[in-house]
Length: 221
Image (cartoon, rainbow, N blue to C red; front, side, top):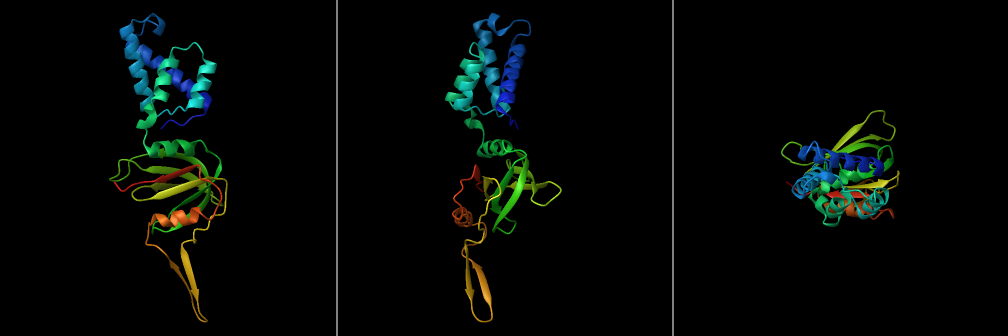
């Protein structure tokens, strides 16, 4: 999983291009290669970008062109970006990349607990990645340190699960989907939906005016 600052991302792109070039012709520079060799380099470079799951948006492409205006990489990188080759990244990959941009930062996680009811976690991001888990070919693994905890915890998002993540520690009512009835002897709290119902997350989300920076709804494999 490749999740980098823009400077390190540019360094990786240059390194991948150099590796693609030397894999085709160790002796010649790209400038001195034949048209056929250049096509081979271009294809290998594109494959390496996809393999390393490097996502480049339009503003990052403009920044690269501004920093390296005469680079042979620009036409290939432009094709990679404008033709959305990184769409081969799964939604889980993209979510993990977005989460990793918040390493060391406080976030609020809204997700289902093991019983299928919403919980809110105030925590600090350590890392995230897409990994196979059990019978699932993909799962979102989030490593984080919850508020007032000394060690890291891991949450694995699989199956029919949903998750929304917000910048900072914010208040979200995870009981928004519950009704309360009271008589003189008993107070009864009852959920409006069955476990893992997406309406739980929808109702909880509506209790804040903040927008999540990442959200994911994984379909059952």
